[in-house]
Amino acid sequence: MSHCTTRWMGLALIAVLGACSSGPDVDGVWHAEAPAQGTANSLLFSATQPATPLGVELVIGAYGPDIAGLVRYYRSGQFDFARSPLPLRKECECAFLHQAKVDSTGRVTFALQACVPGTSPESPLGLRGELNLMDDGRLKGTVAVDDPSQPTLATSSVQLTFVRVATAATSDPAILDCQHPATLADGNTASGL
Image 1 (tube, rainbow, N blue to C red):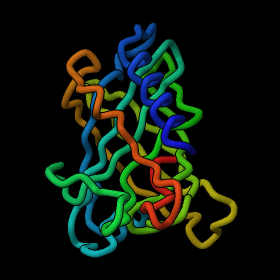
Image 2 (image 1 turned 60 degrees about the vertical axis):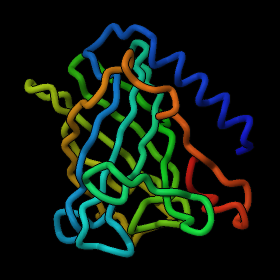
Image 3 (image 1 turned 180 degrees about the vertical axis):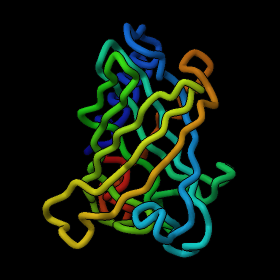
Image 4 (image 1 turned 90 degrees about the vertical axis):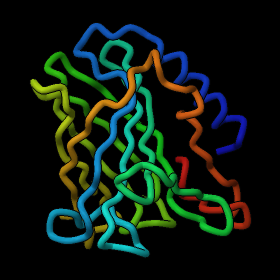
């Protein structure tokens, strides 16, 4: 995907973040901490420090039942150090949501086809997410591998609980930047898909 295409996707996401939703309010920026690598988390973890919880950010803009947005990964659950796909780090930074929907009950579903910190840090992996809007306002659910080309990862998943940290109206449009290096010399080409 070219830099121009990524910019257009970002502009489209900005437009959608400001749109009205007829269903439950899931617009905004959400944070979750993926547990350290282990039985509760066989999917998202820091490859260099598996004992360190990983910060997972979900940016959602809903327009009726359709959702646009992205998932971004941070080096810690403190959300203080964003991952970078650029040299020298070449980390898995973020991925755009695909086939994303929200239903009338607040169930959010989406697919990802990009790198995953820990499990597949430099090549695309298919994932499916299903989160439910809880009575207390949190989004809670599972992100699991959904990729027939990776049968050894078929049971990999992680339970996540997201807390909204910003609404769409208060979000900085820069939060939608999701870099996609064009070549391996430019960085991690599996990031930003």
